[in-house]
Image (tube, rainbow, N blue to C red; front, top):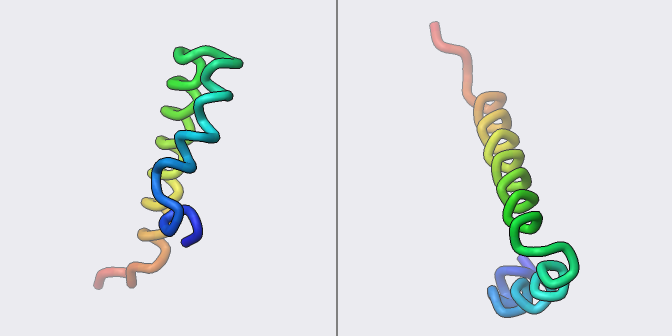
Length: 54
């Protein structure tokens, strides 16, 4: 909720020093991994909440 209120600018402000430190390739790879894990987590949560068919 707090991140939504602050907007994308604060995320960028925290990301830039990290990108400079580790490089854009590694930052991109890390972001991809985190994104895939969050998608999988969301799919698994959604499956648990759906009632069984039949």
